[in-house]
Image (cartoon, rainbow, N blue to C red; front, side, top):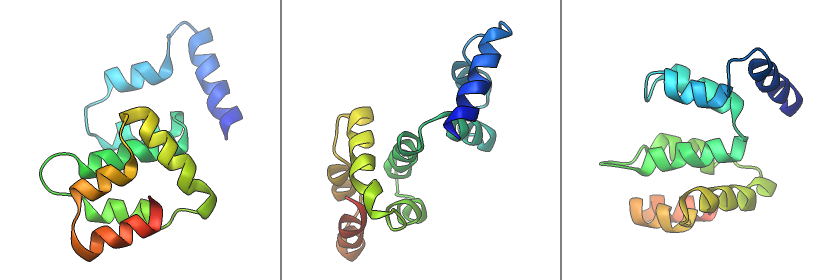
Length: 115
């Protein structure tokens, strides 16, 4: 998968279009499904998942379905790398973010599942 992603980026640049990921971010409608799809395809999986988690916790309310779908379905070997990706992007631990944005038993389940 990384080989294909790298080849597409390289060919895009070779044909004189510039940086594909930057163009996707700049030329697609903010918060659109198309932008999310293209960004996911061009990004590292764990970095993209950390962005999705932050978006789920940002602002008023919490997108609990998104938190559950990512944190409760992680393979054990992906927990630490996701925590690292989240911290590198936001300079805040995933556990701190989950604690501050959730409450009660739901918070405990998420903490046990993926942070």
